[in-house]
Image 1 (tube, rainbow, N blue to C red):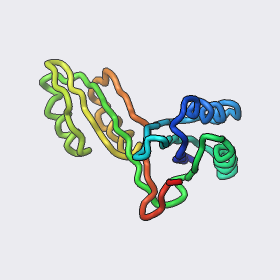
Image 2: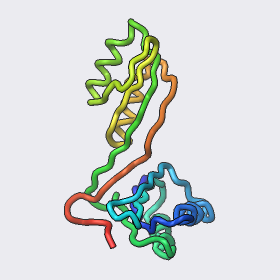
Image 3: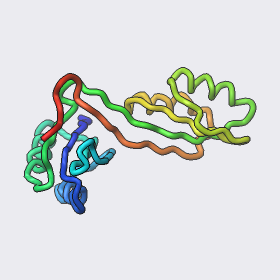
Length: 163
């Protein structure tokens, strides 16, 4: 099962490397990874997605909590949460396809962020499922390049990931 794990950790050199090392040593795969400083510049929030059974995720969580740089770990998928991912897609856009591409972007509440004589760069923000659906919906267009940010997420309500 796909899981979103949010880790609050010290914003120190080597901290990210130790987290990644934990996954590689145990043969666990990281599907997406985002990390950036929080409102407290001494801390960073790392959000990753991975797949595993409840037992595997429990083991990952326990091992993450043992790392010196890790302050707190939350599995966001066990409760209500909000997740977003930004995706940029460069598509070939000839005159015949422009109207169809514009319509598809509107349906997915995306944006056209760059226009060229032969190509568009499209931006779609949403859950990974929404972004996957967008790619499927524009399969008629020639996708030249695609990049995804990885998942960022927060637990809903008053549950917080703080020290």
